[in-house]
Length: 178
Figure 1 (cartoon, helix red, strand yellow):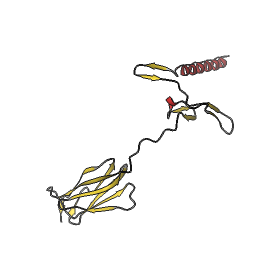
Figure 2: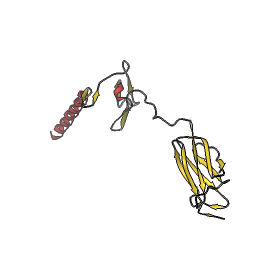
Figure 3: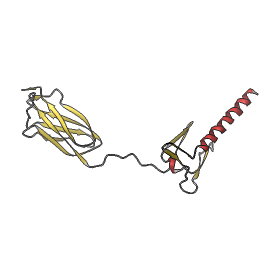
Figure 4: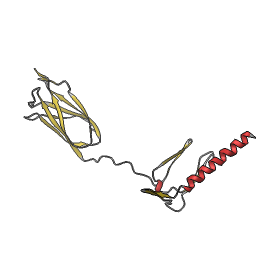
């Protein structure tokens, strides 16, 4: 008798919860409004191979893209939602300076860019004042920039950046000269 009472209490509680969820389909208050809506005219039916469960209905736009989990099953409702905005293919630039311990620019030093979607490393040489620039680098990627100088020691010879926009402040400073 107790087990049947527990069963009916659990079933009754489930019905109350379902009724509360159903009643909450249209609500408003504060600075928001929830409305019940149907997209398309009928939805569909889905069965698993063993007919252990069946889903019937139409997902509505207000729930577009949301995920509902119940036990081991889940459903994504609404329209197909696009992936979040990704960086565009437009290229950005990476620039900076290679300087001595005293802050003077070092010319003719190799700066190498690797990583991201590069198939081969890109190499540039610093100008008269130690400036370097890589143009047309794909954003949304992670790159490693390495400085290589025969006459200078760089305690931090590599820097890793996640490129989201133009980068102009890369600095490599030598701590001694041969």
